[in-house]
Length: 251
Image (cartoon, rainbow, N blue to C red; front, side, top):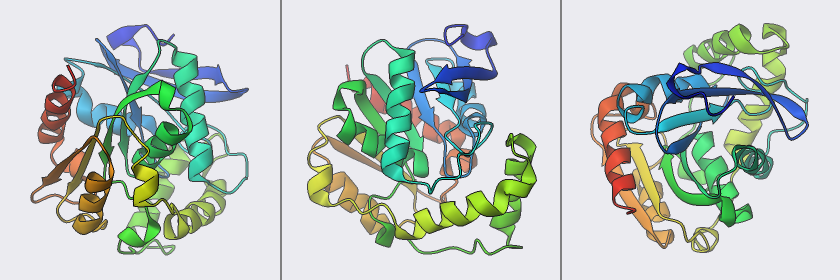
């Protein structure tokens, strides 16, 4: 299934003992796309496929309790997300991989690189923070614009249906405001090349992105002007070419 190339859109696969939704676009060397919190894999693939899909095979999966992958009722945890990513990479096979993670997906990529460095060749970290204090809080109260958007997307895809959203939202918001709690010393142990990217108007502080870049031994930095946390959707062509340029520099 994972090798069907540009014609493949999405289907379930048995990974780590559970049904996991897998999506794919494009063709060429694989880029593993890791979606944001309470998101789904097609978000990133659809946004970046027009350019990235001309050069790379974009493949992503919906993490537990998000998108089309069933919820297990457990608290969300970035370390466990890293383990999910590692299981997916093992399922893909082919040695080490390039991870492109947005928001929670970028944090999951960091944990994967720390837990299983053998599976990670390089990372693009878009709008990701390594410490929960590196961000401004935003309104996710029931009835807010963000809450309604997330609720609608969840209800369209979740095997449990929309009635489960308050439960996953409560657990996810608790994660966002309290984790991760990595340190510059933790990041200093990640040896893979990593591009740290975000919009200048992201709720994650630009100073925090700079600190991440400085702490990563092979870090690179891109602050995108006139863009927010949704930089990937606001400027998909620019983001795609930044990714292409970074990856070409790997040799």
